[in-house]
Amino acid sequence: LGDVYKRQVVGGAGLLMVSSVKYHSFKEFHIGRVPFKMLLGVIIAFAIVFLDPPLVLLGVAVTYVAAGLLMTLWQLRKH
Image (tube, rainbow, N blue to C red; front, side):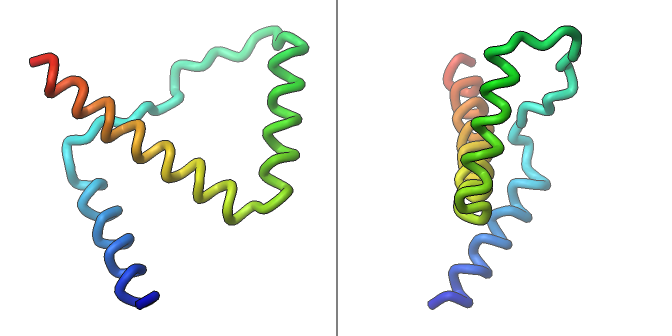
């Protein structure tokens, strides 16, 4: 069961890499003076990651993939 699931995840990731699904690249961030609330948010985010790194990072990755798919579906729906 685990081996089949791993193959499906790898196959799905491979298909998404060659698809036309658009993902947010985070290239347009310009870091200047950082507000205290933002710094506090980053520290809290690191603390959450340190609680259970594999689970938290998997959740972030799944959310990122889902956001790209949803944005692409939304763009297709608008046209």
